[in-house]
Image (tube, rainbow over all chains, first blue to last red; front, side, top):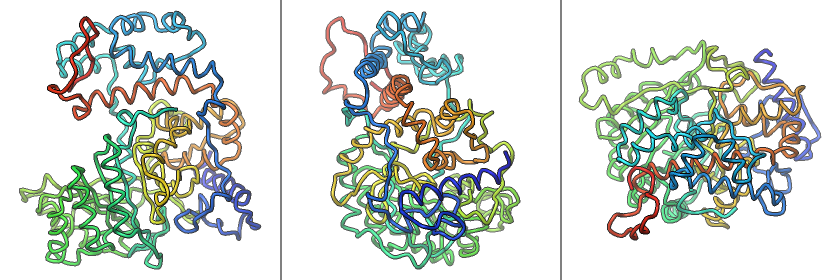
Length: 162
Length: 373
């Protein structure tokens, strides 16, 4: 796709959205959003709550099914236990899928390439654990680096944006 | 979702006290210019700093941007002094209009130094220099560095720019400073990624910058959303200070004049999409949508994650897909978020319990894992 196409596509999508939520008559070409890639920013024209059709992916008890909540609770416990319980960390490290199945999370799939999942697995690794037990940050970092766990190829955007 | 205040909170508070600016850059994300009216009264700026310092143990830095935050004049000094007194680092982002000479720069920076300012960022480049000459940036940055304030010159980054990083470094005064001054280690320069907000111009970037579908593996979660609590000039609170946040209504989470910052922050944790963006970033979420609807084109033309984020929120098809399928991602993303938070907090010595006051560990209980404890 040509880069220019991205800009035009964004404009078209946005014009339609703005027209929908703000009740504007002019969709493209001459409306307030015309000429702007992402439409009129709220810094220029504050909107009222009634003008919003907000996309919220609810985490409320009524919107998330009980079985999903059970999975979330069990995984939250795992996220604590890999730090605090060496037996859990070790079992998860040895066979993550089997561990998840054993604790009733057989339908859950964790991306093995995700950094946080790699860290959870590494906490059951004998070298990593040993470095932690010895309170040896250097050995800890080396053990993580040896397993490709350090994140360094993308700069923080927090500084870039404010 | 119940929020643990010790585990969840922003690291940055960004105050945008006004959108008024002495410049009117063509591609300004907020469309700031000298005619914009309105600002946050100083009493409420101080109250927001106090609230954030008291209610968010995770908070480290208060950023003042805009608009042009130096238009606050002495109120800016007072706000920085208040943040400093609460043990927080501070950063100002400016176009440097006030540094008309070396002497003017030193005179303006002195009260900021006395107030405890830790970092001063200067924005420059083709768009900015239509309003503020580069020599003022040099005056301001050099004066800041010489007084012990960390200075950063941020140059608009784009292919074919007339003013580049090389030209900045070739400035005779700056070059001499960087070569000989004992304070040179306090001054840095960087290129940002300048993006278009008006569609009458195309801003190109080097090929490697484009955030294409083929490069999905290298993109990470957004470290701005949820981590940065933002107060706009009309005292609305936002979940991030990304370049497109004023174009995304969902990023606004409430009115600071009516609700405490802590309550607004906690309330946003009910929105899974914010957590999802924090963990995976907008590109992977957009890709998730294309897997559900292969006819949906991935925004390969984006050069900055905030562009993809806007494309995600402003595309009705993506919104519909995410609303229909997000529950599939909830367990995995929440696990990763919990891991991220636990790791961050346990890596930060300031979150470790004080040794003398810490309760004794239970006999035979597992050792606490994490450095700084």
